[in-house]
Image (tube, rainbow, N blue to C red):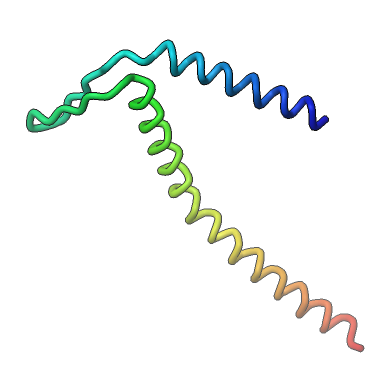
Length: 88
């Protein structure tokens, strides 16, 4: 299984490397007020992918913390319920 995982990772790396090599053309991104940014296409795509992934993670943090608080509360309730029904 370890070898299959290693081969899969190598395959993904080679595909992404090929993508990066084929998309090395310079691009100009135009912003407001005449601001421009020049970079290669693959760098721009990687940057925007990373920013999108980061925003997605930040969007789920509130739900994650709320669920952890709910789990802690339910565990306390379960412990209290066990103590009431099964005194030692």
